[in-house]
Structure formats: C-alpha cells, structure tokens
Amino acid sequence: MSGTVICASEPSEPAMGSGDASQQEWDAWQLYFETTARLTARIEDRLKAHGCSLMDYQLLLLLYNATDHRMRMGELAQRLVFSPSRLSYQIGVLGKRGWVERRRAECDGRGWEAVLTAHGVRAFRELRPAHARDVQELFFSALHRDDAARLAELMRRVNGLLG
Image 1 (cartoon, rainbow, N blue to C red):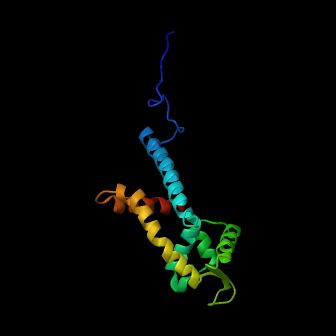
Image 2 (cartoon, rainbow, N blue to C red):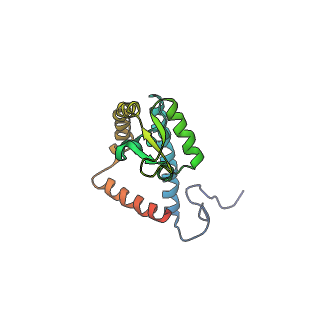
Image 3 (tube, rainbow, N blue to C red):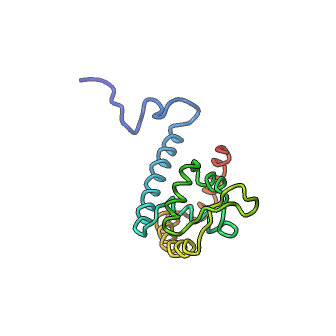
C-alpha cells in the first residue's frame, strides 16, 4: 500500500485552524491550556485535603488583602470572574462555615459587601502556609531567574486584551 504517511507531530495544516498564528504558537497555547488545567487540578486537590476549594481560597485571599477585610460584591464578582448568582452562592457556602458575612455597604448603605469574619481570618491564616508550600513546589520551583517577571508581564498584556 502506497501513500503519504502524516505523523501527528507534523500536521499538514495548522491543528487549530487558519489565521496568523504559527504552529509553534498553537503548540504553546495547547501546552499552556493543558498545564494550567493540570496545575489548577493539583492545587485544588491539595486545598480540598484541608477542607477548602480553590475558589474558596481565592475569595478568602481577596477579602484578606482588602481594606478592613471587606469588598463590595460587584468588585469581588469581577475579580473572581463570577456571575452575581455564583458569588452569592459562594458567599453562602463560606457563610455557613462562619468565614464570611454579607452586609450592607458601610459607605453608602445601598450596595452589599462581603466581609471576612475573625473566624475567616483564622481559617485563611491556617490554610496559607500549606497553600504557599504547594505553589512553591508545583510552580515556583520550575521558574528560573527572571521567569516570574517575564510571566507577569505576559499575563498583564493578555489581561489587558481581556479588559
């Protein structure tokens, strides 16, 4: 049987379609996509061993770093890339644990804020060391010299395109 054999590593056309991107760029995108999914899953699994999801942790982190450990619900939803209903659900989950409360905004009384409780502050402080070790092991340990600065600059540019 004669014919041309096409190897998977040598596609006859770009794997992801046409456009200005090169095969090397598509390969980089695929690697980024698969690696971030794998990294996110691994971090999620490790946080769950401590009774916390990655989204719980990110919400606690944002509130912990906010002035007076509080943030308006709209801003929090935007930072987490959550719909208002998704954020309300997540606040409810953390509220049942006593970590977060939903309150009227102190500044104007019109909007709502999520407020990290004293119990939530303690929970975050207990979670933070294990999470930091996990990120060090699974992410930072792979970086060299100025990789972090270059990655941060790249992510700022991509974030800028996303608005």
